[in-house]
Image (tube, rainbow, N blue to C red; front, side, top):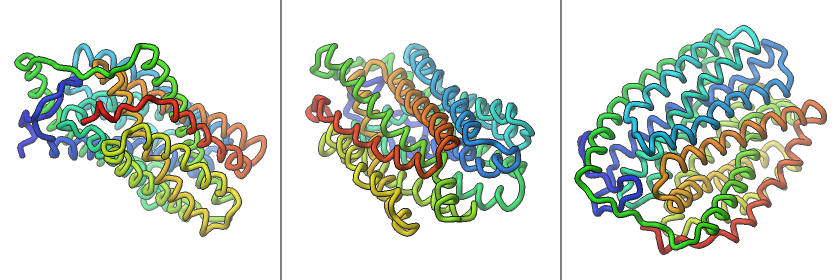
Amino acid sequence: MNLSSTNASTIDGVSTAQKTVYPILFSIAFAHLINDLLQAVIPAAYPILKDNYNLTFTQIGLITLAYQLAASILQPLVGLYTDKRPKPFSQIFGMIFTALGIISLSYAASFSMIILSVVLVGIGSSIFHPEASRISFLASGGKRGLAQSIFQLGGNAGTALGPLLVALIVVPNAQHYIIWFLVAAVIGLLVLSRIALWYQNHLSLRSTKKAVIDLPNLSQNQIVISVVILMVLIFSKFVYMASMSSYFTFYLMERFNLSVQDAQFHLVLFLASCALGTLIGGPLGDKFGRKYVIWFSVLGAAPFTLLLPFVDLFWTGVLSVVIGTIISSAFPAILVYAQELLPKKLGMVSGLFYGFAFGMGGLGSALLGNLADHSSITYVYHLCAYLPLIGIIAFFLPNLKKKQS
């Protein structure tokens, strides 16, 4: 199927009878892979940067916070703006910002330059996600959970590949080898250019098709309360994920005396399991109701996170895969649930939830880094183990299953 075809399913929450546009879904998922692979270079490079510049865990946390704030604050604003004025080519500018950040990081010679580099990557991410999430929604053909899972799978695959490529390319050589990731950015620009042409063509349908938007059968107070509950669940999930993505390698190195490369490979396994969880979370939400997937995926990880700090290296690897699979299945369901709560604000909702997720991840990383400096990495994992218990509040979400396609 030609990428410029216009048989997409939905226009800003508008239901039509048209088919799912799989070439666009897989293309935007691949672009998401590239985007998140480049983002993943940042935490994957932490052991190298820590050694090169004698950074403390607090400084590591501040690097993550700077990146995540740049990625989080702008996202809802970008989404709100593009809800009113869609910009098909905006993601190309986002990738350019990310590429500039990668170039800067590869030659950064001070803590302040590292901060500047990650802020550029964060800005690129903030431009990319709202419109990319909208495109996956538009091409879904009503299979919104599946579409969001395919989109998120690309991101999670990129997040898993980043540390692996850093371990293979950068760790055996030097920091400036990060510049090789610019090749991925160029590929991303080519893919996004094709998607932008399809999106631009698709937008013309809005002037020829009457919008019929499915609104949830909920009061305004119920919608607000539901959004707040989802935000709290995002806090629980992404602070725990920050403990893994930013500090899991240090935890393995401290507790089991692993080398940097061996610890990175364990991180890759965890991130790969997150990709698997993301893939299954959306379709399960389509079939059984998003509320139940959200509830299980956050609360269901708790027994395993509570056990993780007490087991040996083998079982640490096994439990990290189980935790990654379960807890990562939440986000596609959470995001689609939020989009169905506010179907007239797809860009704003996507930007808000991606932004809040990034913000919580960054804040959590900074606080956990400071805590690690004043106690130990092992203590951080004992504390974070309780975060998934917050998932019990998903019980209070209204069931939107009947409203789903």
